[in-house]
Image 1 (spheres, rainbow, N blue to C red):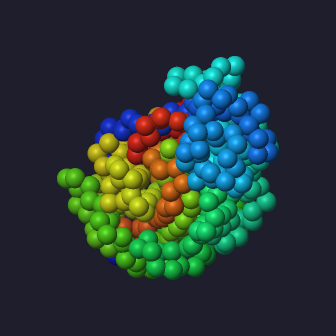
Image 2 (cartoon, rainbow, N blue to C red):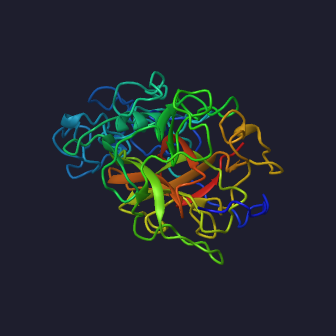
Image 3 (cartoon, rainbow, N blue to C red):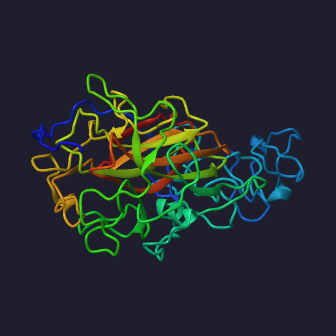
Length: 409
């Protein structure tokens, strides 16, 4: 039995914030940001013609990318016959993600440093269409892993044999990748208390080492501890140790959502927002009870820590020891984001507030992300994470790096 008599430590961050962001900022279809920088020779993007084709910019293996319909002139993986509506521009094809023109964009030829031209990047005959929303009607207790991926902001689906982007598969797992069943430890919520709303669409995905419910919902824990999965096996390298703090090697009540997907051909990276809540904060900062949330990527991008892409400038994964705890009594963001969540009535607690993680990706790459949470050291004093607003970054030439930061106001 853990003795819960340690004094409250403090609310101040224990390490510095990692400064890295991917740039961009325009809202794009299926959750994406940024512009392509409009390469030369871009057409209007309707049908299989290049209505504004400029012969002076033609290229490709046949020397004329407007006429050879069976040749992939721009080397983007699609020919005219396969639906490429502008085979002179590698940013335009059925496997690309639509890029909304920034306010004031267009009117020029684009290129390096130029404003993007309005275009139909995904060859669906529409230009700058509104982002797709696919989670507005998801039920709280819908345990489909695809529904959870939809709640993240991922809507498009594809297969391993297709070349378009989207979800290939989604599975519930334990933290180490063995199969699991979603129960009350997952949920699709339209808010977390009255003051925490979705970042996009109608729902966000919630994972918990207890119950993913607020006090007003059916199945709410009613306490700071509810155990479902019991002892688990952590992924290699976890639970990650915190320098100068004692650590435990055992985890409990772990649950994970793993999504395999193909990136758009014009993507340079992606981002997602999350907020981590824990009853362990602040009493159990720098102790063995270091509940953690990680996002394991396979194959891992450059800059990942043991495959994990959510950590602070001291390489601490998301836990009560991360620099970003800003929601608590006496913290910079106060306690408003705890109200109505259970973290305000079942015990004192804290949260990070909304953070954004970015990571690079190669255009057209197939990869997996495993979002996992667990109790460390014992099965008591649960933690919960909200995840939303998965977005593709499609900024031509943008250097996307792994990092986590507070969501800009």
